[in-house]
Amino acid sequence: MKVLNYGSLNVDYVYALDHIVQGGETILSSKMEPFCGGKGLNQSIALAKAGVPVYHAGLIGEDGDMLLETCRENGVNTDYIRKLPEKGGHTIIQVDRNGQNCIILYGGTNQMQTKEYIDEVLGNFAEGDFLILQNEVNLLDYIIDKAYERGMKIVLNPSPFDDKLKACDLTKVYLFMLNEIEGEQFTGYKEKNEILTHLTEKFPNARFVLTLGSDGAVYFDGKEKVFQDIFKVKAVDTTAAGDTFTGFFMASIIDGMPVAQALKTAAKASSIAVSRPGATPSIPTMEEVKKGLAEA
Ligand code: RIB
Image 1 (cartoon, rainbow, N blue to C red):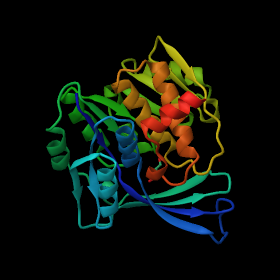
Image 2: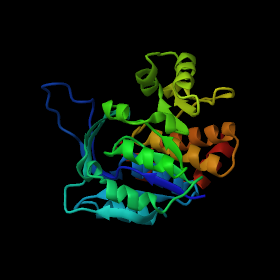
Image 3: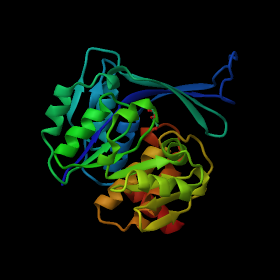
Image 4: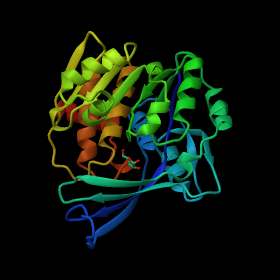
């Protein structure tokens, strides 16, 4: 069984600010640092740091060498990443004094996937292999259809949530990893149990991990429901906390852990990511997570 993560790679330009800029306001940032990021890349690095061999597929631009380098340094297989003579994906991230962020996303090469490239990548994978997806690349509907035809198990983090998801046949998804806001956008309900009930009605063949911010996370597959609290820490930068959670949950499940233990591992990993700056540099190793769990 192989694991493919087909997703975005971004350079994140992170600005430290007292508060998030308001409309019409100009404020001075005390610090600006570029970090490697992108939901796809962050999740691949989390999987690799959690000890699961992962192939990443996606398109970088002229400015993307640092992204490729970061994948390699962290043990992500880069055989299927391609570079285009175009502007790559990047973000402008404001981080306030409480570690909360807000993000402007420029798609660049992440929005230039072609059917030929997708076919070429998926041709290397087969029935039972996992495919992990987010919503920061174009042709997501085609990727889902083609991977499903091959019998791959599709894991979707529908983030950022937008109208492009409507073009996708989401009944083909094996596991959704989503937050409560995305849950509300799918179902129209705010309360976690109502969200989960309506998600299982809409997608009866799927299972779900719903993250609830400071209220933790819950897994539901239509029968079994498992809750997990957060590990409280002082937030420095919340960027990539969700991606770390996704990567560690998936890695734990692939490794054969029971759901309850996988949720706990993911919650611990994401609490460590929140306590550090940047996206990929904030992601811990499995060793750090296990040590943290032993001390908790
Ligand atoms: O989930 C965090 C990521 O979202 C950042 O690294 C940024 O690139 C955006 O895609």
